Length: 149
Length: 149
Length: 149
Length: 149
Image 1 (cartoon, rainbow over the protein chains, first blue to last red):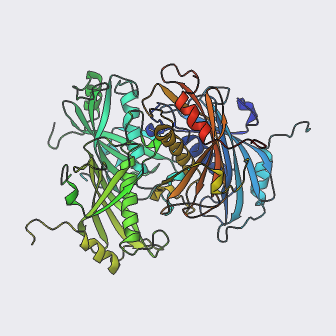
Image 2 (tube, chains in turn cyan, yellow, blue, green):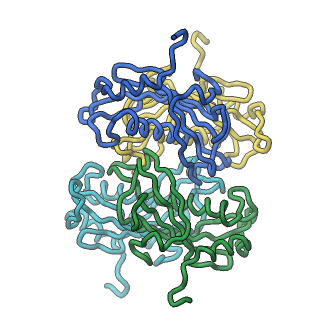
Image 3 (cartoon, rainbow over the protein chains, first blue to last red):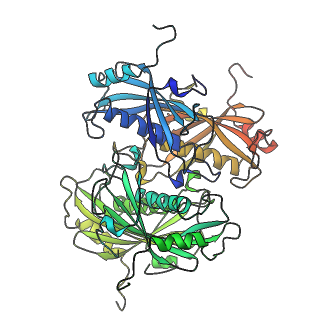
């Protein structure tokens, strides 16, 4: 994981999402799998609401090629989670997002990860150049490279 | 199903909950299983926030003995759902809830069901009389019997 | 529920399916929602493997209009479940299935329910007459009407 | 990802698990989140059946601290998946597993990942030394270090 225990100011786009009773497993906390459902949902909401992609149903769809998560602290129902997004890398056809989950009110991330989409033609599933609206939106939430500026 | 296509005024307690990208299945709508995750979550939130039960972790827990759902209309990500609750029957140890899901803004239910909990001792899992706070809260959202009043 | 605590001989088609770690919720047993994932999967496997429907991707798809479940006994990871099917009613465009879950080796059902599909045209989503292969397969696993025979 | 497109002989422990209808999302393939449900289940089955841990309910439980997955090829219902395990690193209180999913019959992994557990006391949730049966089982499926032997 590149940035252990990041703070909220390391991310650019936030969205609170509800947890569900059954998200908690036998150990009484949100199962490790559920974090990825939040990452997936947060990225797709941003694509739809900010980046101008028709999701689902558009000509261009995002296929997930890599994901990862570090778990710092437990989360779980009944508390909602604050999903957080930034962009680590913009490629010709792909975007790698930094994703995180915060407890409401907490300044340090409870979980942090990465999520890489390759954007493809919905019919033949071959990579396409990023749609211009997506490229612009991704650059607007990019984390500056070290030493940039 | 007792009350096909009920309207919002047939229910007493509402709570909006978020959907997730993966709630939609191959047919592009919320999979029929997910409706029950919303019923389950809505009842447990009400138990915790209104009926005074410590959920999870309390001495008394609700075990599900019967559920049902009629699906009138499709739901799905990215739209949230409005969960709706009322009480159909209060027993010595059990409560049968009427549960429904509405699209935000819609007056007729997209899905309606039933959800019956038996309340048991958390250790020996034997039925116990309803805690007083739960009985009062359940009666407060009960649907009047036909001809009552 | 029509047939409380049915035995295996009340069903005609069986399929063992695996549980998952996260199927168990905070109370240490399979969450009530997961039962429906097994019903849904069992019906769709039977449609594909026995009833001759192309699932997914065919011209005719099944939309779920009603489901129900009675929970007699807890189930859960790591034990698999034996899904069981029969047909309660064959309509012009619909089939109502009796569905159940058994622990491996148990003769009485741990959970029993109903699952009603309306079969529709995949494009316009309007009801169609049951494809002939499906009608025949459904009749072959039908539960005889009382007094039949 | 350390070992893109690994073959079956890179793993030491296999287990076939069933998919479910709703594992497939709007794009018709297994949603990226579900891969982690298989990783989680495969590790917990191995802990229980091979490594001698009482799961769930034992004195020592595994808390997930890091997971990752690379997706090479789509998977999905109705095909089952072959889960595959090996051990990348054995620490004092932790084990990092290499995990993968293969289509039945395929020699190259469709998805590969990592899964790190820290083993803790079930009551106070503090790290404990690996139980001896777990350490031995983990070493038995370890991937030899480069240059070893």
